[in-house]
Amino acid sequence: MTPSSSERFERWFPGRVLISIAVATVLLAEVVTHLPERSAVEDQLGNTAEYVGRALGTEQQWGVFAPDPRSTSLRIEARVAFEDGSTAVWHLPQGSRIGSNLRYYRWRKWLERIRSDGWSGLWEPTARWIAAEHDGGPSPVAKVELVRLFHDNVIEGPQPRYEEFTYFTYVPEPDETGR
Image 1 (cartoon, rainbow, N blue to C red):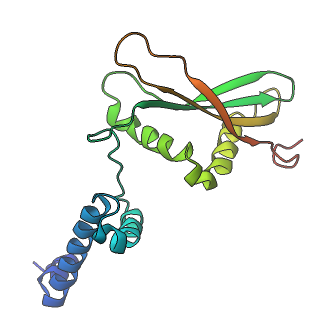
Image 2: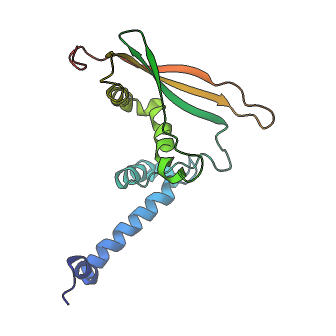
Image 3: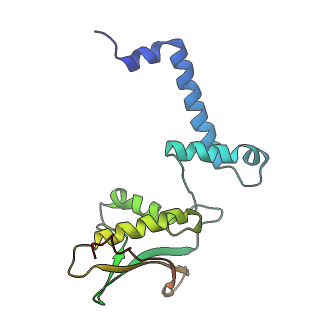
């Protein structure tokens, strides 16, 4: 039986060297991106390691773990206004409480990005997508507002109400909705 091209590459000495370098680079990037800020290694290699992590899709955030877990609950919603005066609210897909954690987890990771000022380049495409999701009804979409909802968590007693902040407003151009 003839070995596949990937098997031949893995058996070829330069191929093994390249694979070893790739594995070492990914591992080094993961270690560097999780070093404490203000360390000498992180100062020198941090930006490159973050770029490698983003390019390979291995970027991670560990804000739920010690020593400084996030103490704020976050949500977003999109408030859709139609030309006839009616409204709708889009929420992040949740799935059932049991058995859908892995399937819907990507939405929670996306939430961390879409609400952040550092990822503002995603706001308009997101609002356009939400407008398209609500298009085709009895009235065209007039406006989509992206709203941050947040509150500081308390340990005992009921959680406080969410505070709101409208951080992006999208108004479709007339030719986008067929008006």
